[in-house]
Image 1 (cartoon, one colour):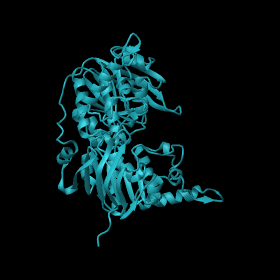
Image 2: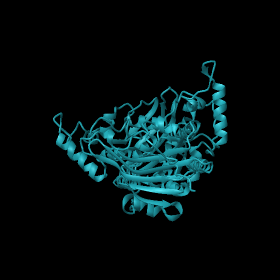
Image 3: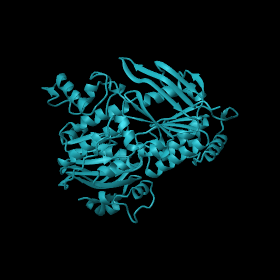
Image 4: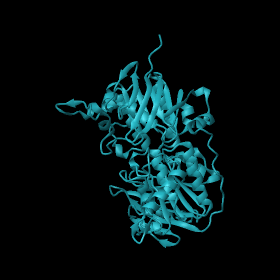
Length: 524
C-alpha cells in the first residue's frame, strides 16, 4: 500500500478583492521525503500557493491534505502544529538575540521560571549536529553572515517539529559556495525523510536538486515533470509560453569617468565602520559590478552614493561635481537614478497607487507637473507605458502598489528608474524575485543604457547576473574592496572565495586608505 502524499492540494482557488485570481484550480502532489520545486513567472501564483499551504492565506475554494488528512489552516500556528514550516526569503530573526534564543523562542526550556540558556544551547547544538547544520548556538544572529542566518531559520522549523519545509527563493542572497552547501543540506534533509517544497527562479539549481517540478503560469498548473524528464529550455518555455530570447550582446568602449568614489567611509546603524576607504571609478558606457554577501557594506555604499545615508569621510563625484553633501533630489537632478535593493522600503510606498509609484522621483518637474501642480493625466500615461513595457500584472493603475506581487512591484520600480534621462544608474538587485523573461528584459535594458553611454554601478547577490552584465567586477568583504577582475577573466569560484573572505589578495585591499593610490587608479 502506497503512502499518502505529504501534501495533496486539489483545485485550490484564491480570489482577492477586486476579482484578482491568484490561484485558479491549482492541484499539487508532493511525495514524502522528496524535494519538489515550484517555478513560474512573477504573478504566476507561486507565493500565494505557498501562503495557502502555510496558513498565511485561506483558499477561496479547494482542499489541502497533509499526509492524507484534510486540513483547514487559519494561521501559520495551525500549519506548524501539523508539521509544516516555512523559511521566508526575508528572514524573520531578532538580530540582537543569540542563535539559540532565536530558535527556541516561544518554546523555551525553563529553569526556576526563567529561560534556561544552557539547556537551550544544548538542544540547539544537538539539533544542528543531527541535521548537519553546524552553528554556534551562542553566536549573536546579527553578527552572522546571511548563509548562517538562513541556517538558523531552517533549524527553527526543525526545532518546531517540521516534517514539511517550505523554502521561498532560498539561494537568492547566497554566495555560490553557500548555495551549494544549502542544496546539499536540502538533499540530506530529504534523505532523512523530510519533505522539501521550494520556490526558485534559478532553473539550474532546480534541476540540480529537485525530484519533481511543478510549473505555474497565470495561476494555473501548466506542467509537471520529473527532473530526469526535462531540461532548462523546456521549463523556461512552460513558464513563459515561449523560450526567452538570449540576452543582447551590446559592446562599447568606455568613455570618460562619470562616477568617482574617493576614500569613502560610511558608518552603519550602530556607528560601526560599514564602508572603509572605498575608491573606484565608473566610466560612461561601462557597467561595474559589485559582488558580496549581504551585510558587507554594499547597502551602506549604495545609501551614501544616492544620498540616503551620510558619508563619514571621502568624496563622491558625478561628472567631476562633488555631490557628497547633496540631497537625493539634487543628485537626481544631476543625472543619477537609483534602483534600490529593497523595493518596499526604498522603492515604493505600499499604500500609494501604481500610478503614483511610477511617478515618484521626477514627479515635481515637467512633464509630470506643470507650474507646481501635479498633472494626473501625465502620471497615468507614464504608468501605463511602464506597465505595458515591463508586463506588470496589476488590477489597475489606481491599485495599491503594495497589493502587487514582489516581482511585479520590482518591474514597476525598475521601469520607473529606467524611464528617465539619467546617465548614472545605481542599480541594486534589479532582477531579485523576477521571472526569467522579466530578468532578461531588464538585463537588455541595462545593456542598452550602457550602449548609449550611461555609467552603471550594479550591485547584485546573483553572481551569474554580475558575470553576464559587468565589464569589471569588484568584490566587497567587511566594507572593503578586496578584489577586482575584468569580465573576460572572471572566475566564479575565485569571486565566491573573495566574497566569503577566503583566498584574499596579499597586502592591503584596493579600497583601504593605505593603498588609496592603487584603488584610486583602478578603472581610471
